[in-house]
Amino acid sequence: MGSTTLTRMDLSEAVFREVGLSRNESAQLVESILQHMSDALVKGETVKISSFGTFSIREKAARVGRNPKTGEEVPIHPRRVLTFRPSYLMKDRVAAGNRG
Image 1 (cartoon, rainbow, N blue to C red):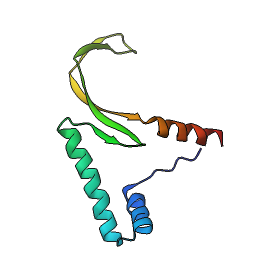
Image 2 (cartoon, helix red, strand yellow; image 1 turned 90 degrees about the vertical axis):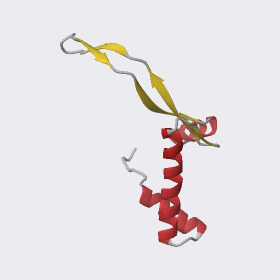
Image 3 (cartoon, helix red, strand yellow; image 1 turned 180 degrees about the horizontal axis):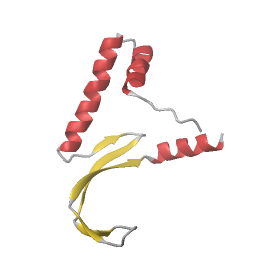
Image 4 (cartoon, rainbow, N blue to C red; image 1 turned 45 degrees about the vertical axis):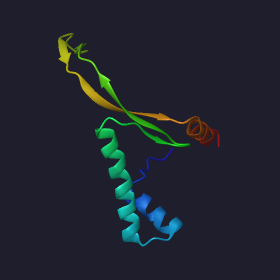
């Protein structure tokens, strides 16, 4: 499996080819979508993209962790983490790609 990365530039290039907007408009559209998603997540909202998956924020409580090397106990502060749950269609599509 190759270690390629899909970038914002790749997304805007795909919009340029598929939709027919100019390269500049395509880049602005991709940026706008990503900004809307980020803003919603910062506010604690869930972002659901049909047939793709759901991005959400999870509150993690404070707990005591342990340094595996020294065994020393270390406090882990409460925090918010971003989670992604792929849709069943996306899971099936990825699984089918693994077989082919």
